[in-house]
Length: 261
Image (cartoon, rainbow, N blue to C red):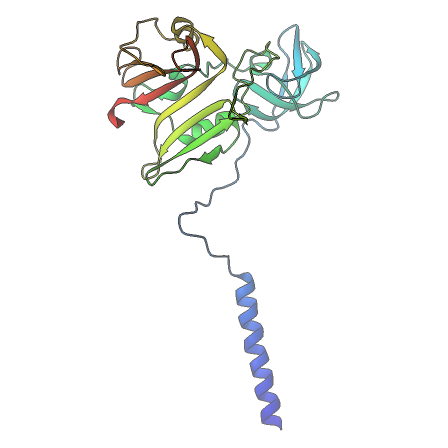
């Protein structure tokens, strides 16, 4: 009887140790899944002051106006999103204000030079954009060799704009933002597309908006106007995408590494 009881106790002990070991073991990571550290929003916690006479406060970038702040008013940064700052204030919670009005340098998000390092002859790292936009980006449209990383809700237009141009195709809302096309093996960006906040009429205006010289395109077809690498930007092909087939309105601009074609 004593042997039986001792055997039972030893069995329970082994079972308990086994369960404890399993409980503390980290769950297996699925093959191909990347474990990333939490993204720390850019400049979170920083206290800034309004530097212009007055500035609008909005519910979201380019969104509904909630009120105004005046020169010297202090805000506490929640995160920076491109040219916008999400903040807290005694009168406003989780609101947005135009970044240059509280001390940030304006960045033209349509310009190739925001994305491309001409010295390295390469697009900036993914982490640069995640930091600038305080978001990981949405991973979309995967192929065996690449995937898309989409950043939205960036307020690509002027901070004075309050009407967002809504485009629908087949009853699906087209989201405006910035799409990076990433090589899975190298994790390097091979091309990207920037949506215009509102369609731009005429390629001349589109190029000016992107701070590019106004030069006639080398290739014209029903959907795109194309400039070869070096014509407008060293090492980059520039591609203006029409809003509609044969239209003189443009919905976005592509920057493509020539070597990847």
